[in-house]
Image 1 (spheres, rainbow, N blue to C red):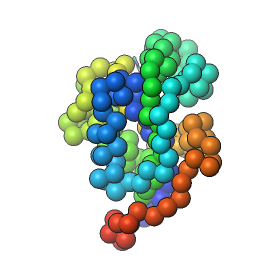
Image 2: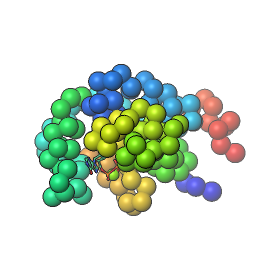
Image 3: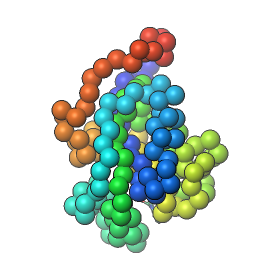
Length: 154
Ligand code: IDP
Ligand code: MG
């Protein structure tokens, strides 16, 4: 059985401007994932460089930093069984044009550089913990039980 874990998710500036925070949150809530932290904030240059460090030097990097710092984002931590991989599946492919309908990027995006949502990479071990630490202090993560947990898990 898969482990319960936490993953970092963020509605990007395009998603915030397009009024998609509620839609994104709804999808994860209805799936049964549990929000354990959430923060409406603006990312500065330093945080952008750290968060997207793996892409430094790539042709799209400066544009990506400009975009992610261009307006508010909604940063979240979601918890659940196999949460990191399940969130990535619900997000779709990096390029919305390649994302299946029914996924967040496939339903709400058309362009690679405006793909609405970020989620920790499940193929990069420790990425979820690293990103949670980067955006949240320990005290901002809330431990609690959802009332439907006994109906969500065997
Ligand atoms: P991911 O968001 O699906 O994990 P990554 O490859 O980690 O995808 O890329 C991070 C972000 O950088 C993407 O979500 C997208 O916004 C942007 N990006 C990636 N590749 C390109 C590109 O070729 N052109 C423009 N933006 C890109
Ligand atoms: Mg990534």
